[in-house]
Image 1 (cartoon, helix red, strand yellow):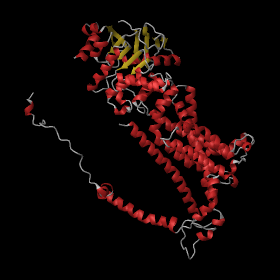
Image 2: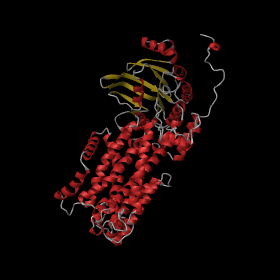
Image 3: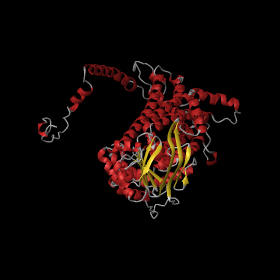
Image 4: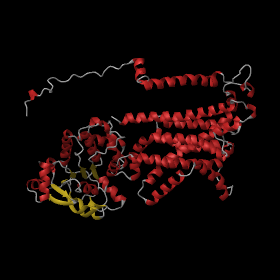
Amino acid sequence: MENSPGDPRGNVARTETAVEIIALHKWYGEFHALRDINLTVARGERIVICGPSGGGKSTLLRCVNRLEDWQRGRIVVDGIELTDDPKHIVAVRRDVGMVFQQFNLFPHLTVLENCTLAPIWVRHMPKKDAEQLAMNYLERVKIPEQAQKYPARLSGGQQQRVAIARALCMNPNIMLFDEPTSALDPEMVKEVLDTMVELAGDGITMLVVSHEMGFARQVADRVIFMADGQIVEINEPKGFFDSPQHERTRLFLQQVLR
Amino acid sequence: MAPMAEAAYLRTAPAERLPPPADRGGATGWLRANLFSSLGNTALTLICLSFIAWAVPTLLRFFVFDAVWSATDRGACLASPVNPEPGACWAFVRVWSSYFVYGFYPLGQRWRVDLFFLALAFGVAWLAWLAAPRRDIGAVYFFVVLPVLSYVLLCGAPLIGLAGVPTTLWGGILVTVVVATVGIVVSLPIGILLAFGRRSDIPVVKLFAVTFIEFVRGVPLITILFMASVMLPLFVPERFAPDKLMRALIGVAMIASAYMAEVVRGGLAAIPRGQYEAAQALGLPYWRMMALVILPQALRVTLPNIVNTFIALFKDTSLVFVVGIFDFLRTIEAARVDPHWATPVTSVTGYAFAASFYFICCYGMSRYARGVETRLARAHRR
């Protein structure tokens, strides 16, 4: 897939590789949660990660912005190596947006304040500019009229779209989606997926943990199948869905595509 | 599958939208629902009514109708043919009132105390009124300007012509308000820091916070006050030892901070992990995350407990009497044995006066906190 190096969201030095994960191992106590993960994500690439629960998908995603730490291996994001150095960690987090399964909006702030919080306090943007920026993104996710409401008044789908707008307000180079539609009522899944499809058209690098196979087919450049803490299979969507190589992948696809 | 038409329970027309059932409104409806809903409730209501019927007239008689409002000495408060069963001796409170407020603060300098009360009331009102303009300046006034101003006013500053007043002369409501305010104002920020410390990943910070909280919390306030005023001079030459009131203030502030730390920690524990993660994922550094995302939610959750701690602290200030400081309650204790006013009702009157002062202050805090809670709840819920 081609990159789009011309886009204007230049936060850090642009590298051809957005994310590089090298020989990553993680243990939870005795449990070997991630086993020798190697993955290179090119700039602008859109990757969907699927697999059975407990397979390490979310854990891997959360390592990319260091919400989880690991015991062995390296991760380099936008040319910055994630070490224990808090400066590196904060630098990566400013550059990587994340959307959670449970939305995690800040309930004590309005929708607009949720979106402007990080631009104002992390990017030191004047309040007026931050609000302008936030309104732009709220319009893009099609809920500008909810800006003054508190999150609890919004439906799940609306909340998740606010969460996407909030992440976009930091002008990230990379977006992480951790099962963004799993906590939604069926009728709200589509509005969130539509927003993500539109975002995919912008050329932003996306890593999505999801079971929405239709979405994977439509926008993914590569689909990753993870099980038991390992990457079992990586392929382009067509090959992945039409001729899965591994028995494990085939079984999984039979279950979810039934 | 059977054809749809055969399913008898299917609707053929949409269900009507009905208004809610009418309330059995009016006073009788309310009475029946709240006071006489069952046999047990009716019995309870009657018992309470008869208690009120018995107690209220007695109290009114003692504290209002038969009370002695003005007199020059104890004579009027003693039983006499004119007033065979005298009520409360308010005249005693009136005569002693300036002592109850100022202690032995020099007569000519009492305007300084009044000014301090005014400045404090102004600051409290500024911060407590949620819709007040420029509450940020209000906070600076309250936490920076007011302490300095109060210190200069109360202790004196010979440089600008305010005579020094040693704290041994302070007393009454002045001391109670100073101790309570310092305790409250110091305990909240320090308690928050200690709570952060206790949840910190840095072992040294955590160890310090845990040790401080557990040690201070495990020792009675009286012990700390005694240690501060009796033990300290054994180790430090009297010349360098801090002022007696200052020692008590530090003791009270330490205790209050330790309790506050645990209250705040309870609030922090109630905030879901996802809130921390969302804030971190946005790149907010630790202190920003705590100040902007976590703390506002935690304090809201735990507001009733915070006010509870404040109220307990306000009442605990009366313990400073054990180290010879004349707080409000102690001034009443001292005045009620004045032979000039010794009557059977003097003590009761004095204690009733003290009780009403504490009640008004504590109930006021409680009501205010309820108001803030409802306000916050209204804003953030659906």
